Length: 445
Image 1 (cartoon, one colour):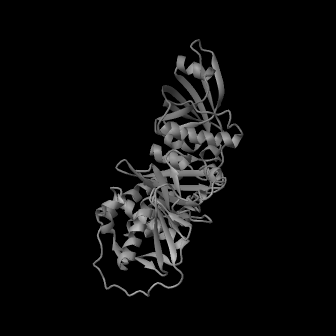
Image 2: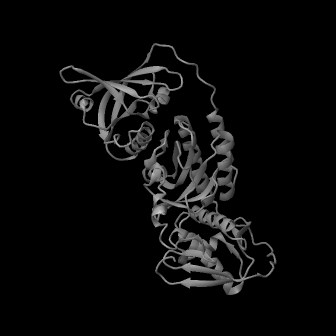
């Protein structure tokens, strides 16, 4: 018998499925079905949107026949199913809810389609329906691409190079030109962008709460979320920024999340280590149907390898022996004013917003140490041991914060920089005089 895995391409909702059920008295009913979701090799889930005749029949007689069609070859299959249960929350429900939103937006039914539950069925049999089919088109070898990408991840010893190589591989091996990596801030229940490719601005430092948009839902549920059609409900809301645009100074302390204005395909994959969320690998496209089950499997495999690499970097964290300190020219030019707002560690350089939170606290420590004794060389270890910084437990969070700070400075300042001087060592480069101003609690300007 065919397994569900063999016909996964039929289950994306590109061609609507149909479902046949019978009442307790044997009266048949046939209707169109919004979505059939792959669960595993012997189970699928169907959308429960209305209490209609189909729902009434299933509750009375838990057997159904569903016909699905391959959108590429036109091959049709009939599935004999047995109803098991309904899920109204959790990863499966959220995955189907996101996908349904895409289908609804694509078909102009966003106000009509609303998922009430995910009905889980056991697949009893799968039969191919005789008929003419189209040949399989040539496809990219995703297995080979995944193997190379995973191997590349294991060759790096620096988080910056690892993330950059990963995004390069997505473009070169998978043809994915829009992608980003976000890390998880457990304390704030948010994700922040540390690397991106394909956008006009990098968006490094931009944040998104858990549960918002396809990225936030994938993070909250710790499961891949894939959308194949435009879904306005799952595009990260820019209305938040627009709503505060009229408030003087408020918008300057938000970094816009990079992203396509109208993505028609999205895939967010959690980076998990021993069940703990480290971050999200996110890709998108302006075209429909760009990411299927095979792409989801490939990126999930890469994300799992990335998680192991991050853990390995943590466990083998060490630093090079201190080399000879290089003499640096004294700062020159006009004095720059650097302000820190103690409420959230927001940092402004000459009224230009830089960063906030843990990265802001780290930067302020570096500046204060520099101003106090013209010290410019630091180690990761001393930052980890500094209780005032209140760093998260996992050391890769420190590495991610330093990457974030390094890249924000490169984008926003031509006289302040973080320069790596060895493994676990870096230098704060200051090329203009700076004056530090500690602002009282009360929020950013």
